Amino acid sequence: MKTVVITGASRGIGLATARKFLSEGYIVIGTSTTGKIDIEDPNFKAVKLDISDSQNIKNAALEIEDKVDILINNAGVNEEDWDIVDIDMDVLRKTLEINLFGLIDFTEHMLSKISPNGQVINLSSRLGSFSQEGGNASDNPSYRISKAALNMYTKTLGARLENKGITVSSVHPGWVKTDMGGDDAPKAPEQAAEDIYKLATTEHESGQFWSEGQKYPW
Image 1 (cartoon, one colour):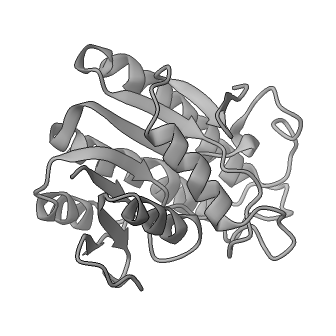
Image 2: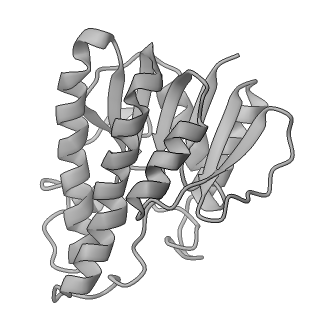
């Protein structure tokens, strides 16, 4: 059986993605800040991961002893940035710590565990795109900056791992009905999970940005 690690798996897209992979016969390791996730399945394991704590990141990576076929970096925040145009340095630092620095830290600790021909998928957003409508708007600056930087990490990591056959991707899941997306969002978490599953289980070009199976503009 193949193994997938999904960060931020206690709710929303992460929880739906964990359930999708379990339904497809995968061993799933999900992380949350509490170490508790509402899934009862013999093929599921929950791991405590505070993506803003470097020591906890190291501990979580050590706890994951399995060889990993797919790493899905889903954990992220955008709690204090909606409809704001001025940059609040405290919010920017907090957002970068979780959406970028913590994600990179955890990924770097996990690289030695990822199987040849494995995959790393980073949950990004169209708000991190420079060329798409909304990509250069002034609201949500901290979130936009974090996702644009994450996309560059995807490109550089993809180039680093090219010789190992590990595919690295960013993915825009769409506007999804979650705590972050709100109740007005048109897309269910299960739909986003289906898109992520298809991307993770099909051969595709590394170091690219994707949405619903199609390349998305940087």
